[in-house]
Length: 252
Image (cartoon, rainbow, N blue to C red; front, side, top):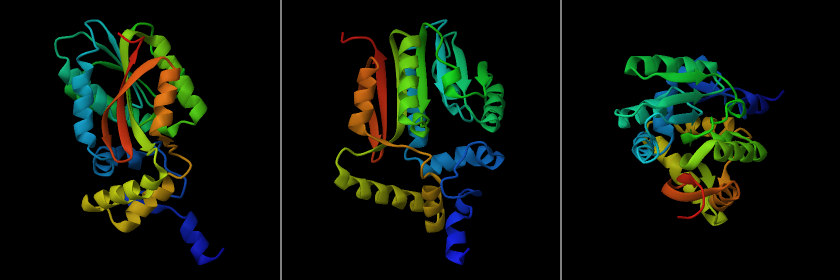
């Protein structure tokens, strides 16, 4: 194999001590789990602010005795933030993540925070929301599913949520105007560089996500949400990342 070919297939640095080969990004890794909180805060625009914003929105949907399901719970950040914003409510928190390494970090975080949660290291499709669920959060997770599985997950969320309950969805997207794809991506790369990532790390992360992260155009995301029975309102967008509050039920 030529040296240039080996370089294209070898693991490359992606930032924060993590390395991954092209198309080989995974959350099933001790290295990723150990560095995840720092890595995602520096890689995803306004990550910390979005977590707090989602938690504050949760106060309008959770009720005493209600259930909150967090798909892709990673290290438990979203559950911890939601619990902090709802101190006077008895809430059942369920966290699901395919990565056992991430779930172990979530257990540690929530135990330290005094938050009780049912955490499961399973694929999302195996843990649909229980009937009458008040809130489903899916932050930066459905983007890693093939389109057919994304739709199945959204249908499952709609089926389990109570009328008027909400799915809060945040993910990477493609702009509807293709001319903006390159400018948005370039500026995001500039922001990563401003946060201390080297050009090699930025390029390595992008290559590692090829075929792993499947971003959809904003209009397509919103069309699928409507087809699955949600009234979706975009509450946040930063270039190629967007978030929606998706309420189950017809127009009021």
